[in-house]
Amino acid sequence: MPSDSLELERLSLYDMRLASGKSGSGITRLCGTTYRSLRNWETGAAVPNIVNIHDLLQIYGYSFYELALAPFYRSQPHQDEKQKRIAAAARKRTPVSSPPKSLTLYEMRKTSGYSGMVVADICGVSYRSLLNWEKGAAIPNVIHVDDLLKIYGYSFYELDLAPFYTAYEARVIKQRRTDARADSPLRDPRRFKQTFN
Image (cartoon, rainbow, N blue to C red; front, side, top):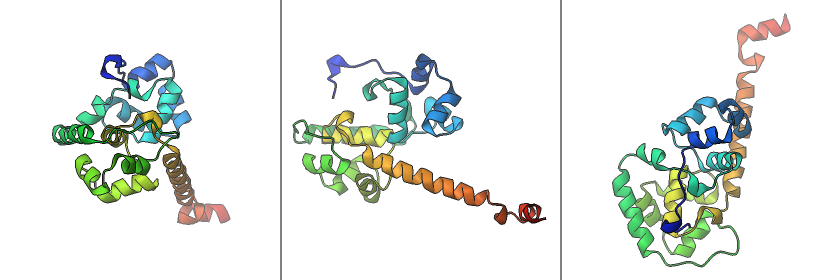
């Protein structure tokens, strides 16, 4: 992780988009999201998942440590107490050496020596949510990833994002199937009559 003395200037997603010169509609086409979702992330009204953040950072050409996370944290309840727990856990962690490869959240937790129940309690999430993130069955948002990395003592660039991309692609495919079924003329009696008359 970057040291405090080498702290990079933090920019919001909105500032990054403006600096890139790309339009919001162009970004949404590249990311496969809606303009409303993008604007909610840019204003801090919603917290994007880690796949969306990774995609946006690649498009804008910025690093994870140049992203201002404060707007996302402000939208979370009981944030001060949670940050105190995370800071205390980060101080107690066992120092880890640089991994030879990217690690999953599960591998990071095991290496750091924390149990899943303890980490879930520190982060204020359910144990099931943590396990789903570790298995790649669900995608954590950027705040949860940032919190976990602080606790485990790893940088964002040591995190294996492949399981989250797999989960994201599966979710997109499922949504497309649902949308296709909803658009089927057989599901709407009026359209069904028009099709066969």
